[in-house]
Amino acid sequence: MTPNKEERLGNIIDGKFLAEKKREEISQQAGAFLKKYGRQPGLAVVLVGQDPASAIYVRNKKRACEQTGIASFDYHLDETVSQQEILSLIDDLNARAEVDGILVQLPLPSHLVEEEILVRIDPGKDVDGFHPYNLGRLLMGEPTLVPCTPTGIMYMLDEYGVDIDGKDAIIIGRSNIVGKPMAILLMMRHATITICHSHTKDLPERVRSADIVVAATGRPHMVKGDWIKDGAVVIDVGISRTDAGLVGDVEFEEAKKHARLITPVPGGVGPMTITMLLDNTLLAARTHVS
Ligand code: NDP
Image (cartoon, rainbow, N blue to C red; front, top):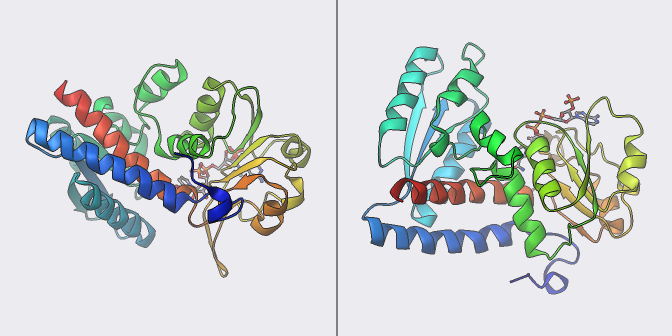
């Protein structure tokens, strides 16, 4: 059901509301899974070191699991952990039947080789969707575990009834976890996509012509409000900690005057990302029992 946005928040996409709605669905499905298979879907979260932001993310993920009936298994490793020790832990988690999803919280300390660790995760348990196998399947349009932020954004667009087919979509940022999968998902739904990055020329002009703008750079307020075409849909993925608090990539107040729909920071994309992690865990669990 599309939220009645006029009655709620004007043209602001309410990520918290949508996340709650989706979590209720997940909770019901996790309950049905438990009843049928005698166990909860399970998510293992591996945290290395003491990075405060990572610790908050992990705590939020644990809380979200508890809320929705997903078992969480936490591994908090000392920051001096060796590459071999963490690879052994991944092997162990890959083999455990009660673990459906494995998430390694990034960033990792610099002595660890992130790529080798992420590739060690069984692709069937790769609930972040970062494994090359899953990214390859996504590129080929095959069903797979897809990175959580882009799938959360697609969910938001659908819930607000945004027409994607034939629209011009611009994605600012080309990371493997946000920009590239976002572009593929929008292309699969027949948008005409433009991917921009730090070498792109004429960014303002490109944004001005877009029907859908996804900003994922981590550069506070780099997308100016007056770049937004009247009636465009603006999705702000960026999160930057500034003296003024958490801010996104988009100059929100000015952009809001032009956009038909826009996500706030915080309270937009962020809550959906964790929710889609739970959804991926449920999806993986179903695959493991089938
Ligand atoms: P990365 O740092 O991996 O990628 C940033 C991208 O932005 C790069 O492709 C870079 O270009 C591009 N970029 C940087 N500066 C500019 C510029 N001036 N003009 C155009 N493009 C530019 O970041 P992530 O994709 O991992 O994350 C992006 C943001 O989203 C961060 O703020 C992160 O915290 C946030 N995030 C939020 C999530 C949520 O749930 N809300 C989830 C994941 C991320 P180039 O490739 O040329 O360097």
